[in-house]
Amino acid sequence: MTQFNKCKRYVIAIFTILASLVASLSSFAGALEAEAAFKAGNYEVAYKEWEEVAKTGDATAEFNIGFLYSGGFGVPQDYSKAAEWWAKAAAQNLPVAELKLGLLYSWGKGVQQDDTEAAKLWLSSAAQGLSEAQQYIGYAYLVVNAPVDAHLL
Image 1 (cartoon, rainbow, N blue to C red):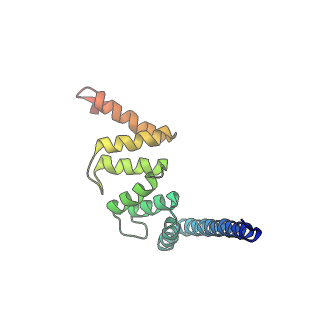
Image 2 (cartoon, rainbow, N blue to C red):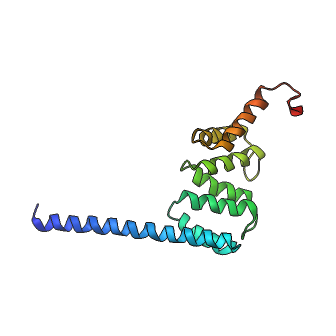
Image 3 (tube, rainbow, N blue to C red):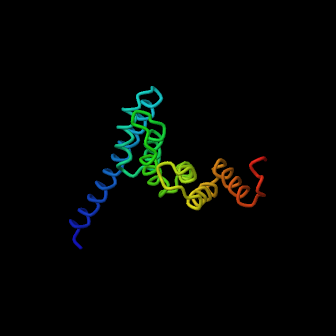
């Protein structure tokens, strides 16, 4: 390999790293703008900013868009869209997304009711240390193993 080809490879590698860094900084800036807009109650702007960040595959932005849909913040309330966004974030093992998607499965909101799927999501979230998911798993075990009058507890 000639000296020129080696140099060319290094230059390409450096530009690739720099492009990746610029994209990361841009996503970070968009996430900060989205959070500021959300805190200010400007949910439409927050949605647009998080949507841009989510296009990069950012699990937190995906979760936040799902949150907007679940509460009707700046978008029409739509549990099926919340489930879609939370599923994207849950596929990246974001514990809070797994928890919330599990709740939708448990309630049958936006997805077909499926306690088994809810429990799988809660177990994954609980294994990552999310205490609220651990609590839901405890309730699930209580209900499954409880006597008929468990609702009185």
